[in-house]
Image (cartoon, rainbow, N blue to C red; front, top):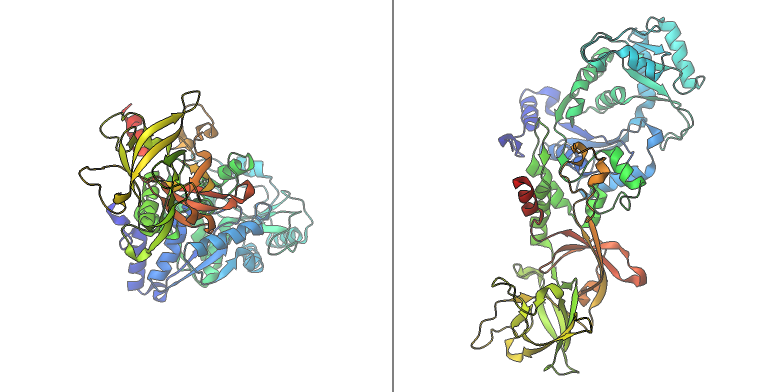
Length: 565
């Protein structure tokens, strides 16, 4: 990763600092985050949010949240509300909450001004004909046969467009620039089109003509007094058009457009069209499915605002597109939760243990720290009695190798925060399956090592008397292929969906203290990973926990083997 990607030194900050030193924009810094409300925000938007709001904070400037709501047939208020929630959840507050539709009348007036200047005309070509006339990257375009209409005729036609006299696609308003320009964006771009039969979530049925993004965005920036308009690299070729509108209309301010690389994260995708397809075709449960790269999905999975902000700072801001390894994101959440998440015990694959020398009617309360490395987080009480559950993976009749430090037949192991137990007998069913262990405990080993012997293994457990049945959802990466969008194997991108991206366990047991936790609370299930309480309940009101991330990067070795061939 480039050395100029630190928060203090990325190229955008260098531009802003040079502008401030030169007194440009009066030394002000004003940014904006301008999403289109046609879907839920994803991890790529988080990068833009952190960049725009972070720069405004660092330079004592302002950042507006402005909805680019010029395409009403794809937009709705649900997406508006989800975007507002995501920005606030990430820890930011906007200076002003605005909509491009706030400026529809002003934008209309600017369009009329262009017509009067002879810089815009009403064109009758349909969309296919406009593409044909536009030319190619190597061939210039051709002038529309309607390009030389008089100012008076254009004003009349544009007024009739607004009045609703024409059908969708029958006419458009185009800027008159240069059909021979090497930049195709300057070949008389459409700036207004007709859209009947839609109810805009802000303006209702007031308008039947809607401005295009390239026309709307630069003028909205200028109206708001934005100083630095930060956008991703696909808009670099649009910058001459951005400047042409502002220069031609002589707006009161002229923001500077600066482009940066978009976030491309391995094992997922951020194409809003394809995310919509995943939702609508039922590949995932919805926009907030914990496998989705949406902010809502990451939040439901247990990701924290601090972790996402840290991730965005780590990947930095550059001018060149590159893939970011999923491990970078996962390391951010691991490091955050390792510090912040309380510890609890959960048995994902239960195996019953009967402690034969523990009194049948006896029960005791043991003290367990909420975080072994942070005494300030305090402790909790866990109950212990004659029957407990351990994980099946923590027992083998015979140790397979010297590295196996868990329970074996005839061997000893310590129960976390409790006693040392020894496996005396293995109980099996008629099919030879292990169904129960009979063990004995050493009553002198609570908080103390046994005399004359060393017990190396420590395993987690839950008390059978008050353990809670929970549904555990083991989420993993959404795609098996690191870049499903560019896989060249003849398969559709959906063929690379990871079949193991969700495994559901319905017989898991968690300690009693997890019975009343709130949705969104995250814990480390000791020796298992980090888990978040889902808003949903299982049938019967039983809790659901989503795995946020494993304790270690389990994909690193897989990918190393794959790379080695």
